[in-house]
Length: 225
Image 1 (cartoon, rainbow, N blue to C red):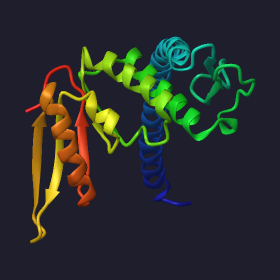
Image 2: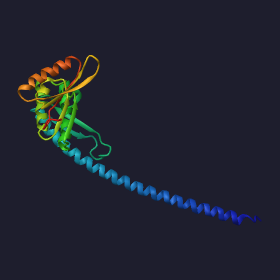
Image 3: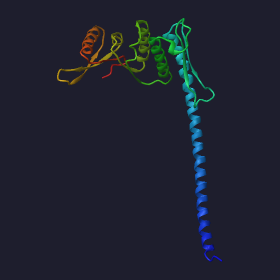
Image 4: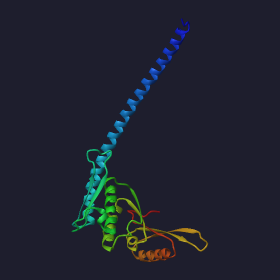
């Protein structure tokens, strides 16, 4: 007969009860966590669906503006599973029959990417946009279409574009450049562009660019100080 059996049983029973309570707490925490995840997934899917629908609609409109006679659309690869779906862009500029972006020219790919970017801007507006060297691949015709699009956005928001394109600088209301002196120090140079002074300012910016300093054009609704 083990005289200590009763005490050992009580200790084991107490340990068992403790672990049982701990297990129930873990199960409850898991259930609560799964409920939170489910709510978050539902909210993400709802938000994404609304954003996807708005961006797709704006993309189709902007694509037709940038490519007259063309057709472009955004397609969800798995529309039934928005949490794991991918996004494909189908583009047919003008009379071309291609749809995949990889078959387009460099300028057409750049302008298609801009159509997608500006579609996001249209669907979810912001008071401020910053773009860095987005138009070097564009020819004169496509650059004109891009600048026309920028002017439309500059009516309601401030648009900052880092650029070396003279035609992009011409549509700016304010231009900034970085000048480097012989001793290696740099200085920010700002110039408001208004009619008669714009050509002189752009010419000065070109001289700065030749010296190795980048120029920044800022087509904005109001000049930035």
